[in-house]
Image (cartoon, rainbow, N blue to C red; front, side):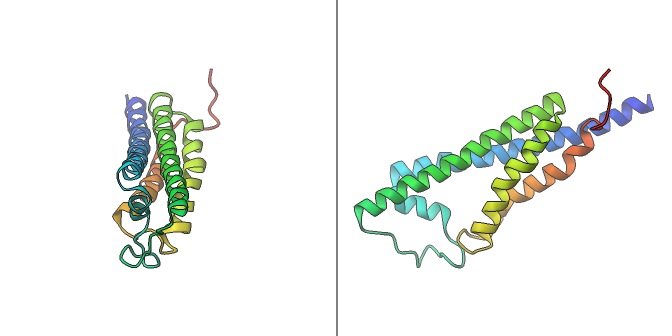
Amino acid sequence: MEKKKESTVLEIAAKIGAALFALWGILHIWVGYEGVHQYLTSGAPGLWNLVIGGVNAPRAAFQHTTDAITAHAQAQLLLNFTIDVAGYGVLGLVVAWMIWTQKSWTGYFLGLFIIGLCDLTFLFALVTSGIIEFGAASLGGPIIWFLACLITPFGLPFLGKNKK
């Protein structure tokens, strides 16, 4: 009976980690949705306002281009960026599913390394550099990712375990 209780407690850690990866995924899919929305309603200025606001790129001081070709190129690049973020969000949901249903170390390592590459690059290249606003919205993803990476392994089977 004690072994079953211990097993249940460990499984809860995997479920919490999976839920955190799912939350991370949903938040990042929203970025893609909002990017498409801004692209369709406001073009390049709306997209820029979505991704700037830090101390080194404040919205009030940012000068949007008036050149149509440059604005079009910027809008396409920013739309691509936001949709790529949504793609990482889909990966977050896949990772969550793999951990929730299969207690998968492969899913965990995808979340740790691939999502980690995405989130840490975002954090260090865009947030700490002052391009994107430093706040709950920009720090939430990396914090959720970190917690998921920290908690999940406690609910996964031992890596060296024999599958007989």
